[in-house]
Image 1 (spheres, one colour):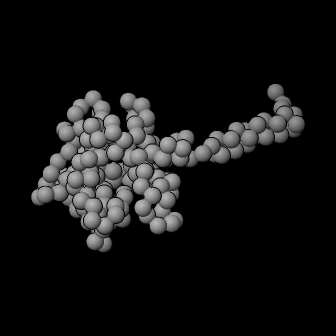
Image 2 (cartoon, rainbow, N blue to C red; image 1 turned 120 degrees about the vertical axis):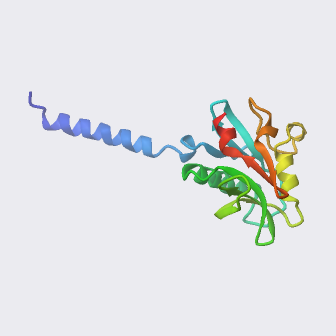
Image 3 (spheres, rainbow, N blue to C red; image 1 turned 90 degrees about the vertical axis):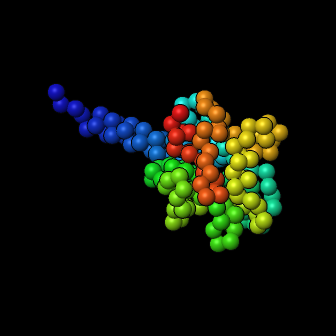
Length: 174
């Protein structure tokens, strides 16, 4: 059966429109980690549903690092590390004399090169901050993030040589 030229053009046009519509969807639609700009929360999509990770309340960083910009940037970093397979452990550490959370390849490991997730204000204790971020009671008061799920969050927290680690990979898989 011969297909007319006009039918071929119509089919090609429909396929092109479908491809454009698919490609033009916002990138957060496919992202595992994203920033909810309205609530200023970094969220992760899991089998258990969408779970808030970090609520961005601090306005103490100078421009351009507003709470919205920090939410977007840190959410993008989580997504990048997840996509490249390096989001194994979150480690409380210091980089360039600043308190941070970074990505480590294993429990007890150093921050990966270019593994920065988030920087805190000078004087912040990153170990205490990571533990607070994982404390459900603090989350209930609006002070921290919630990484709760089927297992106790404490089963994913480790201390090695005085440094705190969170087993993000195992937590995401539960």
